[in-house]
Amino acid sequence: MKIHEYQAKQLFKDYGINVPNSVLCEKKEDIDACIEQIGTPCVIKAQVHSGARGKSGGVKIADNYDSAIEAAHKILGMELIFKQAGIKFVNKILIEEEVNIKKEIYLCVTFDRNCEEIVLIISKEGGMDIEEVSQLYPEKIFRVPIKDFFNSNAVLNSLELGEEITEKLSEIIILLYKLVIEKDALQVEINPLAITVDDNLVALDAKIVFDDNALYKHNDIMLLKDEAEENPYELKAQKLGLNYVKLKGRIGCMVNGAGLAMTTMDIIKYAGKKAANFLDVGGGASSEKIEQAFKLLVSDKDVSAIFINIFGGILRCDYLAEGINNAARTLNIELPIIIRMEGTNKEQGISILNNSGLKFKIVQDLNEAIEVIRKI
Image (cartoon, rainbow, N blue to C red):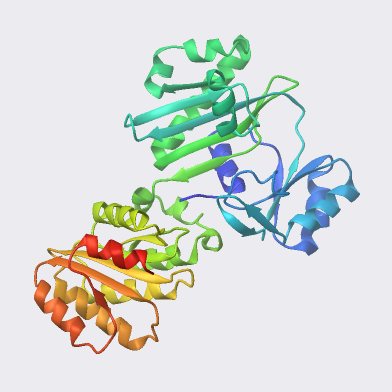
């Protein structure tokens, strides 16, 4: 789960990390008062779940009152376009004091799934796109297991920031690590962490991503969720207890099991198409859950065909067929629907679908599925 910058900065403050003075503004009629509260020069920042806000026009520096008013009115209510996140509507802005910066640092504490441990990522090239830095200047990014940081100051000393700044930086890393552990965060990032002209460290931006599987332990974090920032299909799936991720393809797919889902998406790709989603109904899904999942797939206007690939174990094939049949009867479906099922009660499942009076394409194996998908 992601949260907004202003929410992440409040958590930083709670943990003792310096952030600029700021005020959140959600209504245009409040803009004047908010800017007067912070003063100028100030920074106007769109609050949306995406990086690269500055490149999309969502961050403006205002030197005086008039330019601040103009920038705030322009950003609040605008639509920002991002390469990865798509279109984001700005319904809140953060008005923040400007900080006198001497140097910018990139700092991140995150969980690395490859080595299965928490790592520290740090660079003196803060404020830039860290992916771009990693490609052009990989030697300027230091990535070490957090335990190595606790055992040695070698990484921070290599930055050559001076004893006072290095000590303050070390304290911030410890606080970030504490936040990660106590709040079950997958990633905590500051970019940039500013070294000010008076040698203080201030987090100018804040990004935190939490582990969805641990949210049940943190009611305070769950309250920070902004449903307006969530994909509507993913949000609906969460409420239905389905594992769903929206993708950019046109072939909707439904499976039971994450491994089978990955294989199914590979099959769709092999057939020259792209999956519209990752949808895992789970190994023990009932016919009611299958019906809900099927309706979710059909509701996606990007979907031009549906491929259902089920291995019947705990989820019996007749349960699958009943769920699909019930959903299809209540919907006016014109999409091609390809179904491949194997396992428990396969023949009963096929019989239910064949006798439904509805148009399903039942394939016997994955090779046949590929050929059918290719022709869609």
